[in-house]
Image (cartoon, rainbow, N blue to C red; front, top):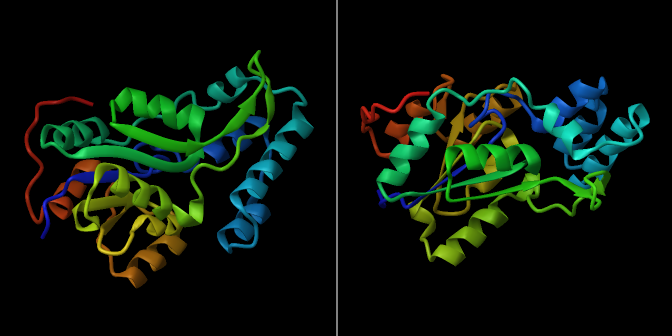
Length: 230
C-alpha cells in the first residue's frame, strides 16, 4: 500500500452533520426541489441548471436575497464528531487535506476555515457589490465529475493516484475515485449511496465519527489519542 499523501473530503454529510447545504437553503425559504434533485441524480440536468432552478424557487419566495440571508441558513449546523481531530492528525502526519464539495461555497469556506484544511473548492453564487444575489456562479465542482478536481490536485502537487484517498457520503462522490486512488464511503444517508458503494467494492464506515476512517486510511491502524477536543 502506497504512503497516503492527500486526503480529499466531501463537506455536507461528511465534515458536517447536515445532509446538503443546498437543502438547508430550501428549508429556510420553505421550498423543495425533490423532482429536480431526482433528475439531477439521474444525469438528466447539469449542475448549472440545477443551481439556476434552486435560485428560481427561492426568489419566488423572496425576490431579493442577500449574502447574509444565505449565511443564516446554516445556523445550528455542527461539525461531524471527529472532524477536528481527523484533520489535525492527518496534517500532523504530513498529509495534504482538502475539501472538494458541490455544496455552497459560503458554507464550505466557513468550514474549511474552521478546520484549517489546506485547500477547498465548492460551488456558489454571483453577488453584486452590495452582497445581493444575481444568480449562480459558474460551476467549479461538477457533482458527477468530482474526479476532475482530484486529477487537478494530483497534477499540481505531483501526486501518484495511489497516494490519494477520497471520502464521501453520496453516490456522486464516487466520481472522486480516479484510477489508482482509494475511496471510503462515510455514513451514507441514502440507500442509493449504499448500493453504489457496495457495487464499487469500497469500504463503508457507517458510524458518524470521522475518526473511524483512520484504520481504512492507514491500513488497520487505530486512531491516535491526540487529546484534541471537539
